[in-house]
Amino acid sequence: MKRVALAGGIGAGKTVLSERLVSLGWPVIDADVVARMVVQNGEPAWTALRDAFGSAAFMSSGELDRKFMADVAFHDASALRRLNHITHGYIGSEITRELDATEADVVFVALPLFRPEHRDAFHLDEVWAILVDPKIALSRLCEQRGYDEDDARARLASQMTNEERESLAERVLWNNGTLEELFAQLDTALVELGVR
Image 1 (cartoon, rainbow, N blue to C red):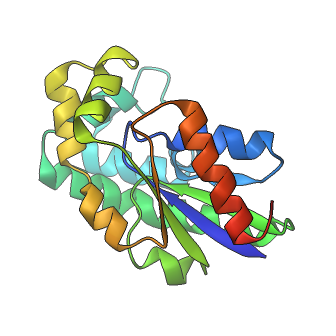
Image 2: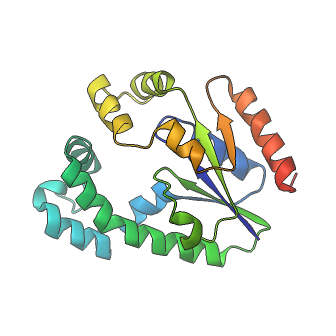
């Protein structure tokens, strides 16, 4: 089995690329989906977050208030470090469990916060960086997702640069144009991976 990471920041197009891969029949493990799962009420990460951030970080239903946490984390570097420290171990364990349970020839892992140590932790064969011009990412966040500009800029600033991601990847897929152009790059990548 080949394991390929899809590394890209917010607004780069990981979700649309993941959806395309799923439509082509390839399994995709999405770290964002896993992250939402491990902070559900009653999960160990939920308890650790409540201990660290208090009841203000939770809605009356007991669910994590994701908007509150995002506002805090993306405007306070120490809060972001604390949040990541608490959640990353649980996220990593669940991704590993899902990878080990997959029997397909190729499995993709969408990792917005890809770090070099993920290669060994998840036994990755390749890393594909999905990159976008920061101005286009900012525009997408504001126009398509409804973020205000300050919030969008804070989120983008908290992540790796395109140059950092590119230096860690075997392949780069640029998403500055149309979906057709992105999908054409994906088709080439799949052919060169030997699975299309």
